[in-house]
Image (tube, rainbow, N blue to C red):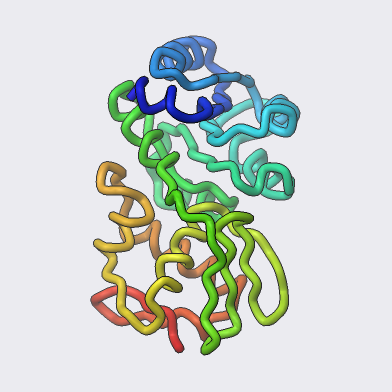
Length: 230
């Protein structure tokens, strides 16, 4: 992995956790792999450091003093300078409501504690994996425009940005309008084969996309998956 990282600018990661031992061990493994790592100990500090650093990825603990991870994520998503930043929660909480709340706040993924370094590095690699294509994808049959370079979506003349996972999911559906993408294909192409997420994760992202661009564009194919409706 180190050789690959030297071929391109080092990804910047902001690690946010109120436990010094966790920050120390995670930062050690990330820096060993060549990542540039900064840390913060609560949500308020995270906001300050993030706007200055503009990281590629923020690893954000959920339960913290001052401002918890959910609140911090909501605030981070309001910052235009951070629109291209991935956010993954670090949490020991496995309840469905906690995961849904995290996704609703704009997070891209969840990484469960206790954290195993090899698993963490694998997930980070998958999160940072992005298409090298920078292009505007258009289709005259629907009033949607997706700009991969700027991470901008234009729907019915209205321009807005999406969290990365929502953007990649919409871009995937938009790549072949009318074609049905199975849940398995969506998980593999958007989240990566080495990241374990459930069907509920896809459902939450689809619901949020429908709320933003309109329910008429994304059709559910019961028992199979989703497609962009022409």
